[in-house]
Image (tube, rainbow, N blue to C red; front, side):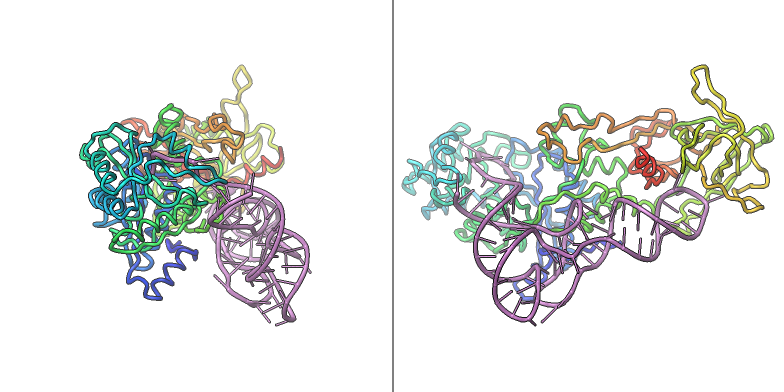
Length: 556
RNA sequence: UGGGGCGUGGCCAAGCGGUAAGGCGCGGGGCUUUGGACCCCGUAUACGAAGGUUCGAAUCCUUCCGCCCCAGCCA
């Protein structure tokens, strides 16, 4: 695997600019607004921005786009830094905030006023909206558009001084109310917000808009390629307008790419915030959330996310990536790196009737067949075992290779056993299997060469340790959540299943929070922080590819 | 009906006038003490459509069709 980006148009542009000597080095930036947690869609942008910088020996800044104190919080700032680092990227010394530039931005605003390129508008938000026109008709000039430079300056300074309440006035760029591009119809540059800012505290009561702050921030930092998503394409003329009319120290260019969409997933900070606030999930880091913190808790490796970003590419076409691609990238990395252990999620008791009572023995189990140097660990065996309920069927359908009455299967690393008797309770539920083992098959190979089609995982009842295992499925039951109009209605009621009475082999009992493991034949799991002193809690990151499940669904 | 974008297999995505990469998925086979992994093979006579230019077009031109974004003092 390589973190190298596959070819894409942005990389090509950067490469060409560098080749042509347009820039000596590439500078990008990842500019999150600290109004929520980062999700896998942001990961695409992070990988792009940091990846391009890395590939061409440039640098990538982390800059908080903190121009709206109403929505931004320190908690989000902290989480964003943690998540970017966790993903594997380092902004070095280059941590910035749009708010670092508030003084400069303010000065430049005065300059635009003095040059007759900005004015204070006393209209209400409603009036401004009403006079902006529509998609097909131009807008009308504000009655305040012709104010003198002196008056504008005075008013703007008084806005800053706090003389007016929120919403009383705004500073607008004087561009063109008749422009077919609505963003150019005298966009708002500053609004009055008597709000405390996470970084600047109470210093300001006027705050710059995104459009007024972003390009200039890029220019101040020497950003060469400002990469953003498609919806900002219409803003580019405005981005350029400010840079052309201000004495900025550098000239960045904006390029747009399509944001990530993932099937069965919603990537909208607004909606994710709603899920958290309404308690539909346990928090931003709920393992079902597409947030980086949720994916981390679920056990998703950052390497897998980077691989995912690499494989989906970067383009301008709006698309929906198949969730299976994400799962693939996780499995691919986990398979190569994670230790194997055995666990039984839904236990079915098995008694080996011909095994010497009270006897115990140990087998050496491979830690990771993909890693020759990984070694082995001991697995204890005794006559009372648990196997997976799914691994037994009293009346096996075609293609079911596992245990059934009279059938012989292999217990991984142990023996071949044959099911001799099925014990049921009063309600007819199978509660126990009585089996015999073949002592000659120790280790799992028969001297006569016979080899069962199925190998089952198991744990020794006397040695197993209890664990809670949490199984996750898509948060949404629809591949296209909200297509029918109601996102909440598409929430998958079975997105989480908690198995409180699972058993794990002793070799898995020492795992620390965050450690990952493959439970053989089941999937990849990760120890959740909810673990207690005497009981581990595992989150299932992703299942193994399951051919039998595929066969089953085809049979239905 | 204004402006800005985008249309290549089920899902992503290369391609930039020379005769359709790759990945995911799917199907088949091999191997196998994880129905895992791994390894083979198959999976668009075709690039939204129709015309045109050219020896030759997914790539150039024209028209048409479809989808997305924009009327926050959000980003």
